[in-house]
Length: 267
Image (cartoon, rainbow, N blue to C red; front, top):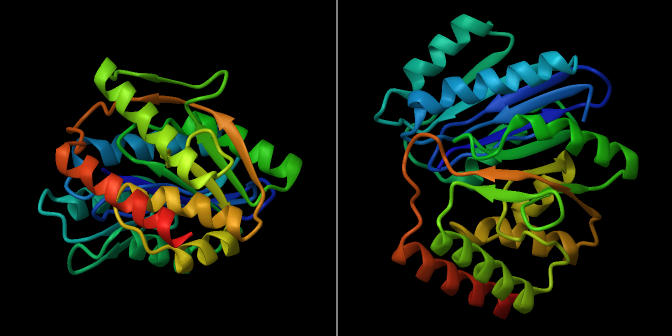
């Protein structure tokens, strides 16, 4: 999966950073936004489309942006595509940060945070499952309540999922129910990954988080509650990826359950 990481500074300009690694997510408050998108092996055609969608939203809302692409030596030509995007949008908007190999989602976030000059970070999937059109609402809610974290949710009024069969929907619901029962995180969509963070908050959470894979995002919310950070929720519509295949299988489910119980035992 691919992710975007966007950072904002407060006001009406923004900087965005995109990273390409083993998975991918994005980050963003107005005035400055940065996005990091680690879409390992998913550059065609996800990366150009999601960058275009982000740019469209940023321009529509007057957000000055910068997108950092962190590529972990993807064999599908991600870096070449990123260079073409840089030519199309300009070096002041697209910043490249190639890495020698798959170094993990956590380190992609860390690299993105180091490069981000904004005060806020948005993390989102870069496979079009998370639509950038929800970003302005994330920013509005954070600004209104000064939340430390704003997370997208599929499971409150106004949220939903499109493109999943009944098995996948039940799997997600059961996964969230088990996690919520064991961990008591205080959020309705613990396994989601479309979120806005204050930059110092994200840095602290990443430093404290030890889980890998699907449990990584869950632990971020559990640690946020432990540290007393405030969390708001925005209903979102999750759409199954347009290109590429889901990596959710038996191994991932077993890994999720093991990681979940390890997290329960350590918190």
